[in-house]
Amino acid sequence: MTNKTTKNIRLCCSIAMVMIGLWTIAMGIHLGELALCDKIDWHQNSLVKILVYVSSIVSTLCTIGLCTAAIINIFKGVRINTVFPKSNVKLLFWLTLADFCYRLCLSNLFVLYGETQFTLSSANFIMPFALLFFAFMYKVAADAVEENNLTV
Image (cartoon, rainbow, N blue to C red; front, side, top):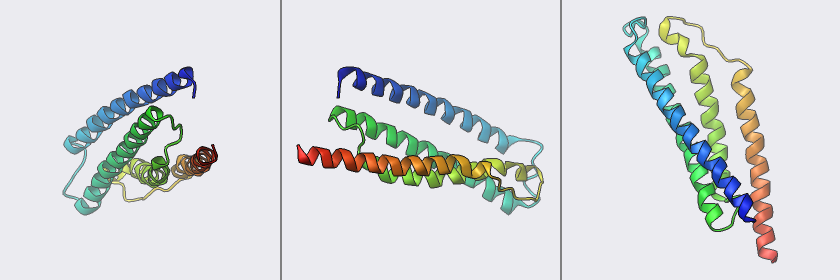
């Protein structure tokens, strides 16, 4: 791996970490505002509202955590000259599931305002499908790199 490629990977990962930090702050503010919002009657359908709210927090934290772990693994991989760390394969599959739950919760946050209809749209499936495809492609690349390293 050339020095320029290593620099570019590190730069992209650093930018991704900054974006994850900003995303974490934005989601923390958003979810905090929801908890304190006067327009939400927490006493009516409280179990459903609490379930949606807690699911939203958990799925957000899982998605952010898995993204962060994948980027940290890439940083570690670059140090040992491995572009596709094998440890990211399982993380990417879990990230697909976490992203689906995250998007499902975000698209149904209006339940907190009294709506009773649950929404499941095609938009909930597009990004998780792309992540699933990427996870399979990443697995193929990680296997190919590992096989190439064994033959040399």
